Length: 96
Image 1 (cartoon, rainbow, N blue to C red):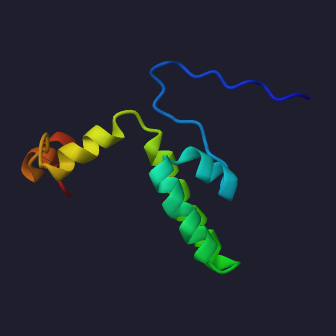
Image 2 (cartoon, rainbow, N blue to C red; image 1 turned 135 degrees about the horizontal axis):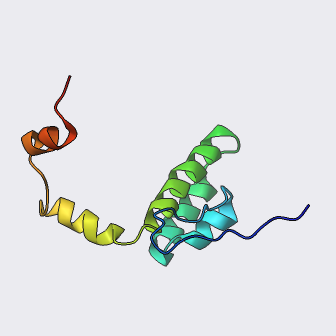
Image 3 (cartoon, rainbow, N blue to C red; image 1 turned 90 degrees about the vertical axis):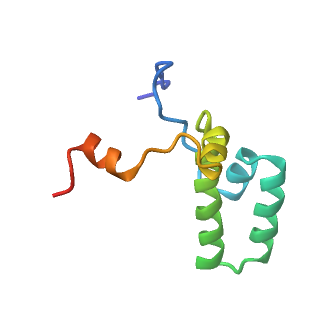
């Protein structure tokens, strides 16, 4: 049996998974974030501490792949485009 290629539609919001390895996570990060990641990896002890560093930066690398993430973060920090809580509650049908 052979693996089939993954075909995604242009409107598919999913992003390709990044393996949870030091090399894969480092390669997926921007150069600035990569330097911070490697500094944390080099300072972490083996076992759970280094696993936590990899997991934390893996999440950052995955989120960085989302189109428009930087713009959404900038908007949120500038308090642009938000929805008042009351309106959000109405949209989802209220809190029960």
